[in-house]
Length: 291
Ligand code: FVH
Image (cartoon, rainbow, N blue to C red):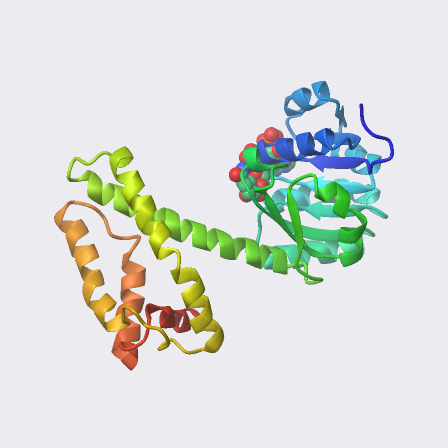
């Protein structure tokens, strides 16, 4: 049974993530109204206690807090445009992945339609929602975030990053950039070692141990970047690394593996070393990213 003292919440979008968000709100006792383009996806949530709305407009009209989690921000704009008349007085929390520019544009559009806007980035996969490992980044209307901090806390740790609606997306994309860089390296490693007949499962603990040992680079790089000094505490200088990294490309080619994931980084390292920074750390490559 929903707790009638808790804020009623609408969830638009019942894909893997939207459904997990709706379930978390139900588990926290909120009355929940759901809408999805394909209505049958609402059925398990209705069985769990949610109310299904026939249209997005009906769903938005049902609750003061509207959580949106669709495939992309084109869908969000399309769905909200069709329900614009119900927006005045609502708080829209958009947890759809997107760019900072999209978030700022949506904030302006939603604001002009009479609703408060908070953008969000979910740093979790659906099974992590409502566990202590889930982090959700928010930015936009501080008053709207504070008013609904309790409900948003149902998803996991809620971190508010400021009034610029684009900031949460920047942090989200930065964290995902780190993740995809790691994924790329991991795939390259498995592909390369697989050419020797080594099973991925056998290599996995070795790779994990190595990456964990190298994770200290995050803090070391942060210190160099914040000081703007890439020559401090250099354990393995760029000249050495720039000389070694072609071996990663050439060795992959010898083994019949593409090195296209690594080639751009190798090019930047060579450029930075050729620019006279060989005595510094690889961290200085960040200067070439600041175009
Ligand atoms: N799942 C994850 O691991 C990540 C974790 C971090 C955050 N992302 C972002 O969350 C958004 C939604 O992701 P999702 O996992 O729920 O995605 P799907 O399961 O593919 O569901 C997509 C929903 O979007 C609806 N939809 C698609 N196109 C339209 C449209 N033109 N009009 C209205 N709704 C649309 C779709 O509806 P249907 O196909 O069931 O009718 C789903 O509800 C996303 O930004 C991730 O990057 C997830």
